[in-house]
Image 1 (tube, rainbow, N blue to C red):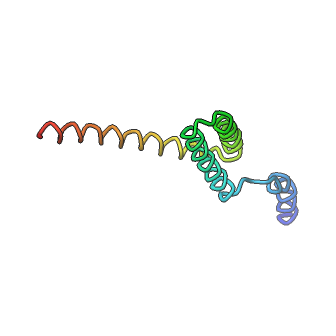
Image 2: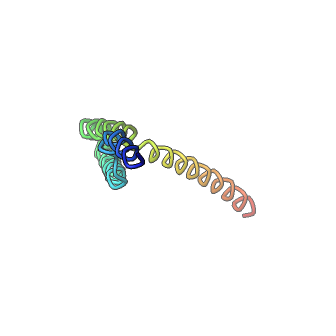
Image 3: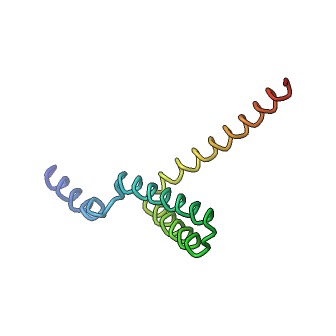
Length: 103
């Protein structure tokens, strides 16, 4: 009886276990690609090449959308890192004002 219950549970869970799950490496690879295209967009902006910049920004949007669908937990971590980075910038600006007023 116990073996039958276990077999039924395995058969019921089979399709869920067989579904492709995003691999952490895929999320990292998408993030690296986004970073590369952000760099390319910056280069295009410096060279005033609007077509190259637009193509890079469009690719960033496609990759970010794909990453958001495949790796929702990765997106949550990135948004928290972005908030912490913004906070660090504000703290740095306040520190600079404090120390420069002493000059």
